[in-house]
Length: 224
Image (tube, rainbow, N blue to C red):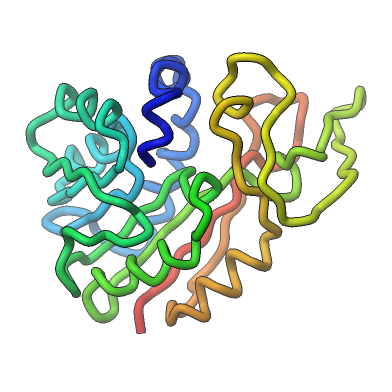
């Protein structure tokens, strides 16, 4: 999103430190269980600075990376010229024709758009028949604004309501850009309502051994 231009420096630093690495690895692992990537046309929606798109390209995918942040795309173009980089809105995908792709990928971006249902609908539109969409979000149960770690490694959830929120920090990614918290059921039900047949969900684990709760929640479905 264009709003990420205001926090591009913070986001790039997070990527540089490997913050989304586990998310990328989980998406590639789940995709490999369903389909080969070599020669497949893949749309990375909300590609940011391009790390996941680059990895998918290295695995043989014919990749288009879409983002509305001009700053993040400028960094993506420095990653590789083997990916088609496109400035566009994930909620409209106005520059992409119908039934263009074999795979649509959304990594850690649905929490950042006000209308995630439109992302599902536009992804459905640009996918070929029987194509696959995979998406991953910060886990709505355990990585929510009202979920806090306890001393024993567990987490206490104080609230689970859908809401837009900003952290109380100062000068951080989420204190500036905020995020949309939505229950798991919202994502799953609207994914299927769009027309995707749900193949399975997955919950990649925490980065640390201290917390045993999942860091992310994802799903993979097929256009029918």
